Length: 238
Image (cartoon, rainbow, N blue to C red):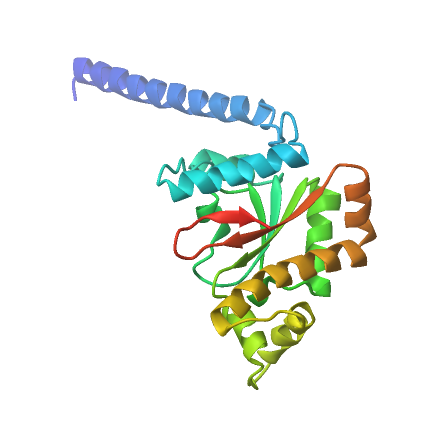
């Protein structure tokens, strides 16, 4: 190999290593730069909603759903990251486990907006009560809605009083006290029982929880009942 070739090879090597070196330094500097940046602050509401404002937001969302004008908020990748480390739901929903009553959809809300508790017959159990207390006491949720729905199977079973297998009878037992004074034909009776059951479960929340009762007294919490119409998609307040 002559001297000119050796010089060319040496220049090529230096150019290559120089380029790679600069790239490595840049990459290292970039990693160092990003590692030194402060982490993004955990998402928190700029101004927490009042109980009345929370209820308006909830019902406005249902109207968008009914009118097929859904905005589908808070469902992006950015939202997932925003609430990954903390949640600030503006409403807690105690609703039936019925597959036709999905709260985020029928209220046109997204990730981190609603604190959902779903159980057949939207009944209050110790676990349900504790979950709602958690939302109110630790997450500062200003609104609870107990949401029943048209033609609820759990309420129908309670009205008919049929013997049920397994643990299915447990929620029937929990609904029975609510419907003891309802009267009418079966369809009317079931619909009245749906409303009566929502009212009964709300009373249980108020009666059995000092946390919720105090929130109501302080004006920091509102508890309301709702009835979801399977045929129209509309929620009406009870």
